[in-house]
Length: 207
Image (tube, rainbow, N blue to C red; front, side, top):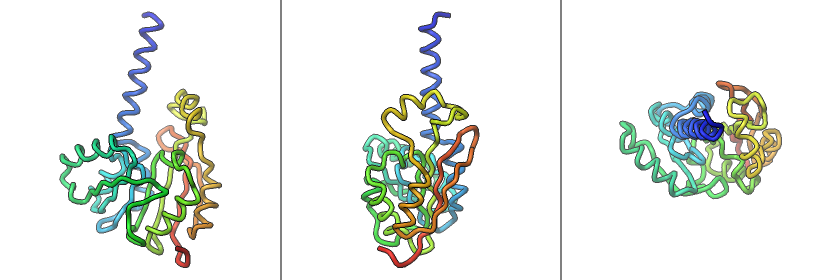
């Protein structure tokens, strides 16, 4: 087998694995579990993409507001929603972490998977999260640590981090604390994927 042919096969396999994560993945399932999303709750999915966290949360009985700045991703989720039994629980909207299309204190839980590195203003995003979450509302924010050589897709790190530097969960936790959250930064490993995770609970007294 030629090296060129081998490289092509590797590239196809690489993007096939990425496509699977856009649809459903262990990290998204872990985040929905960690957020303890339950029936009747309103969940915000920031950077929802094609819905790998949105769909399982809706199946659990939550109403999910899936926010994404990409029209392509929103269209993909619109199409996927058509085939979901619980599609009436999924609302899709344009937006970013810094500009969330929700009313004040209208969300029980907020999640984000592999989107924090896209946020352009972490302070503003933290304030927006505190604005939309109810007092006592929960958040689980996770980015995969592609810098870690133990990551199953560590070969992706060089090209990924050249454009999107990895976030520091301790810094994110500090900014969220300033905005009015009780926060905790951790670095768990899920299915061979080291994570940069921030969890928190909204506290009253900030706007």
